[in-house]
Amino acid sequence: TQQHMLSGAVKHFRDGHLGDNDPDRCMRHHFVETITHPIYKCNSKMVLLARCEGHCSHTSRSDPLISFSSVLKQPFKSTCFCCRPHTSKLKAVRLRCSGGTRITATYRYILACSCEECS
Image (spheres, rainbow, N blue to C red):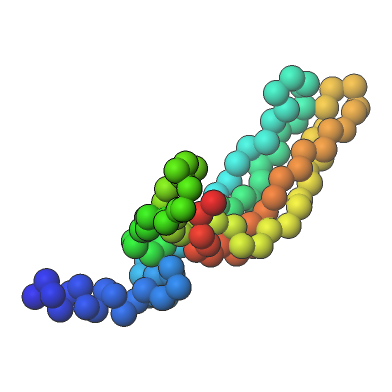
């Protein structure tokens, strides 16, 4: 029944995270990208990158805030969770360009993803 399915699904949610056995949960996914310089003629390099992708808790909410002032600048407090990088490290790739010069491109390589409160 639908009620049974819902109660089973709710058990997988905790602290804004989906259960570990959900294939669509927030997790790191690898992909390959070709790095080229937008102006200089350099040899391109293929690098392995990672992105955070997937679902977090489906529960988002907005609660009204109470004020004793006639002006309420922020009338609601909203809560939601996003799939974001939890830890990352800085990496660098050196491109060999015409004339023998080398140009360094930098990027953040994602080590782990997690569901964190959206800002």
